[in-house]
Image (cartoon, rainbow, N blue to C red; front, side, top):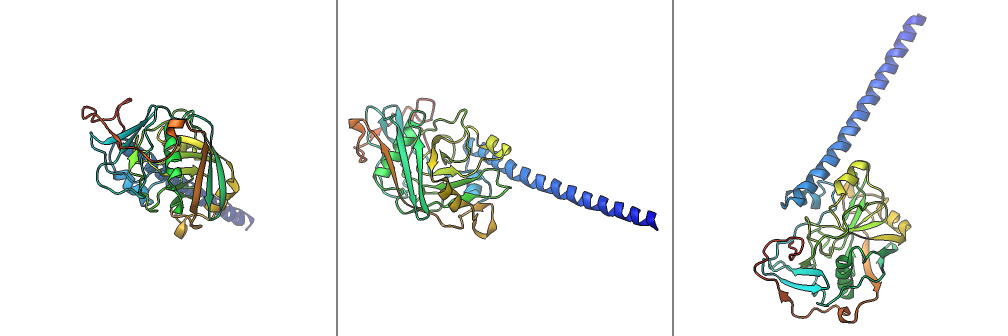
Length: 308
């Protein structure tokens, strides 16, 4: 009788161990599937197609990607601020808000900059990095001067252990993930950076398609998530105050319990300010009549006009 009970107990223990192992294996497969989708999406986006971007904007993967804006023509209007080139979208798609491109100027500021993000749930403050991402910081400065971000939603969050990356995405006045300011500019500061908690980076629809959408990392990515993000997104700042507000916004998760979608808390940016000393010729936000790119530069290169 004793041997029978012992044998039965061992059988139950083995069955429990097997079920636990099966659950762990299934969880690993689910996590790997999500990360594989993220990595594949980034490869496809950077390859110049839009298939993965559609998935991103509908919550199908975890990458912080803006919907693609139509490409500017080879002879698209541009402005230059120092070495920064801003290319106007000439496709006919209306910008999310009517704004001017950054005004042409001989130099771009690399002075220290501070961004204050006021939301309906509290305020976050970030130290920006214009020394490494001057064109991005200046583009955001120009948009802030025109109140582009006022009363706009943070429309997307990736959440939960399967996400791999943990971001709050903002900067689209339409709240759809497809809105843009009507101009684009190149990637910067993508080599050797991380996307850890508090880091701010630009969302995009592929290389050199930056506009207004940005994301805030509210937690460190998984190892696989970090690999998927590496080299793809301009890092331009770090939250230095208000991480508790970021947690307040993101910790309740995503609508309907998903891993990618609208945040439960419905965060709304009420206003953004950027404090930065500007060269005299670069102050102000209105842009003069834009110059025209030479028709002989139809494709983006290291020195050519970027295209969206």
